[in-house]
Image (cartoon, rainbow, N blue to C red):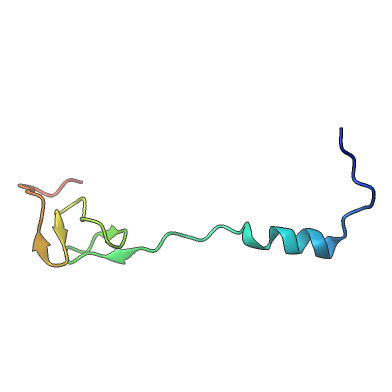
Length: 61
C-alpha cells in the first residue's frame, strides 16, 4: 500500500480542496411567481420565455 513520505501541510491541503466547495443552485422567479431553475420550463405554469409550452389546466400545489 502506498504511504506518503511526508506530511501534507495545511496550505497544500487547502489548495487541493479549493475547488470542492458547493455552490447553491441559481433560482429565478417565473412570471407566475414560482421559483424555477433558469433555462427550464416552469413546472407549475408550463411557460418558458413568456410562451406557453406545456398545457396546464390548473396550477399544481
